[in-house]
Image (cartoon, rainbow, N blue to C red; front, top):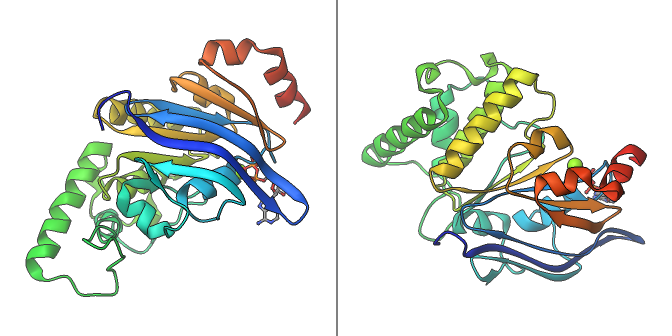
Length: 253
Ligand code: ADP
Ligand code: MG
């Protein structure tokens, strides 16, 4: 999609767990070429929203459209195959496999039908292509030199980056990250922010779901603030940071 076109449209989305309304009629858009931050205190409904967008959870009401398609009847894998790639809040890498093999695993998700193929054997040519592409993704994130090291030997900050390389193997339109800065040191956070900016400049659209307001502030173009399941505010980082209601929500949370 061209810059400025709507990639993701969240429209009056609601999710209930029994009597609890975890996400309460939330609407926002993400446009091509943007980095958008979805922030809020613990329990605000951010991860639930993330799971609704990626198809891990189904909406109780409202609509999520990705590239104009209503995702309600699509599986998680089908949504990913359309170009909506995700990472996990708790890193799900294979620690005993090389960085390269971890990223090759991400390329399997892309087939005509959009179904995962990891159970099937790739032929030699396909496998060679997958390895070359995985290496290119490692280069893109600055980890090519460690391609043959074991994923489990990486420090946490680089494991996060590897997880992103794995998501990029899908050749996504939108990358959506849940708390990418959690547990990282200041230097690792800075490196991650620089990488995400570079990926955006390479043409990727990014949605970051994040509790850490400082991490998001210097990185994103626009912020959506959730509190108690509802959208409290939406705006540019400077305006959001100064907003008394946002400050109070964070202090109270
Ligand atoms: P955040 O990611 O912003 O911290 P969550 O989306 O994880 O918030 O949680 C929002 C609310 O929904 C919380 O009150 C949480 O306890 C509740 N919740 C989340 N997932 C479930 C679930 N699977 N079953 C029941 N309640 C849930
Ligand atoms: Mg969360």
